Image (cartoon, rainbow, N blue to C red; front, side):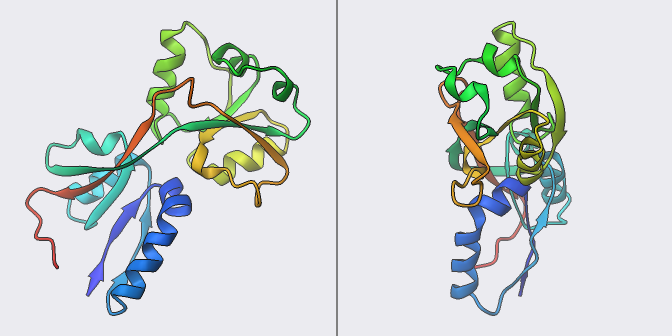
Length: 190
């Protein structure tokens, strides 16, 4: 048997590995082909039957042909180079974030519209230097000094990200929910 899940990069890289490992150990004869895409691509591939299961935040809930189940909630953090002045300027606020160039997710990706909405509701303009669809790309450009990073907290690993400092930003943004989506008319094999 073959299973075709599709997920966003952040989910595939930071949340799914233990689940995929457990699945493969339990079902060694099932071949997984894990695809990645932005939330719209995830939802569209499942809706078209090109993928069996989609795992994404936000956009997946906009497709009436999909049944979605909430999986877990997550929130954001800010990452900076180790000696960045923002680290000493507490508490973290939207205004302080906006006073620096920001490297963050593409706004069609990973809760970007929620981030835009929060800044707009407070009348704060975000100074976006660069957007990417991959948390690791965001962290790479932060390490190069192109700005501070605004990303999913799950994407920060203190052991791997030794050149970056992290500030929790969950007090500034409502949590985002990751959903599993399947076609409503799909036959789900046991």
